Length: 338
Image: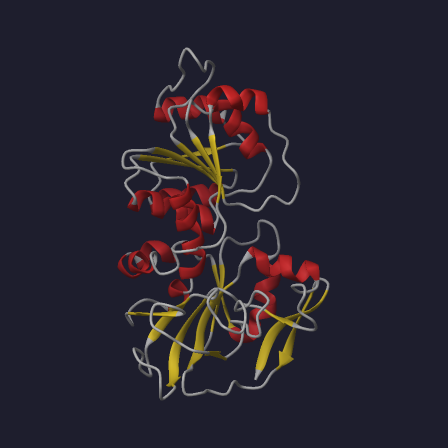
């Protein structure tokens, strides 16, 4: 069968691989959809994922159907629709340096167990929406890391998939007012559709001043100047101006969460940050959230479906990866199998 692999620096190709064999403790999955992540292009820029030698299989945002269940496996049936914890495979991270990737027709789960690598979902959830489970878990981990409380006022920088997923996560956790900041009008419109209370085009508006209008004045005698009453800021954009802006306007005790990948060092004014006693937290992956987010996707799949901007058939995966890697060309690209 054919599979998509990184085969060299900035080179992704089709590679022929053997169909996996299924043992008594294994489950065979037929891939039904797989999302494209920005890290796929990053892996290609490295020429693979060290220390793995040779071709590196891609695809770590899958949804699948169970087509074979080993004799010693309990809790699964042929025909089950499942979402997948790609970090719990015993042969390495699926699509992120392991032996298998999601851009291939069949994947085997060794030593399969309910609630470990797989969670069964209802059949009514579209495959490409189910494939959002992995990136939405990343977004929910960021929400959890920022310690949101009911009634908090939140600002999210970046209306890409992670930012929009965080928007849904913060709303589910009880945030009272959520503002999304971006520079692309279509993304801001989508944020409003999904449930943002307000949006800001940072290329046209003064973010700090506008946030004071939207969320109130948080200035105190100890920390003066433009200080919105925002409790939590989340950087899902990955550009230096975001943490620099936030640290210059944050009220005393506010939290800044970083979930975006910054490809260059960021210079911050620690002297200015000191007086605000800002909390800065970091979020990567999904230590506990992979199946925590699933029930909300099942219940509100129509909202999550709005995050997807492009869908490609499996035989056009290379074209899909190229589009996803082109800055500004797409928001969320998914591959759907026949």
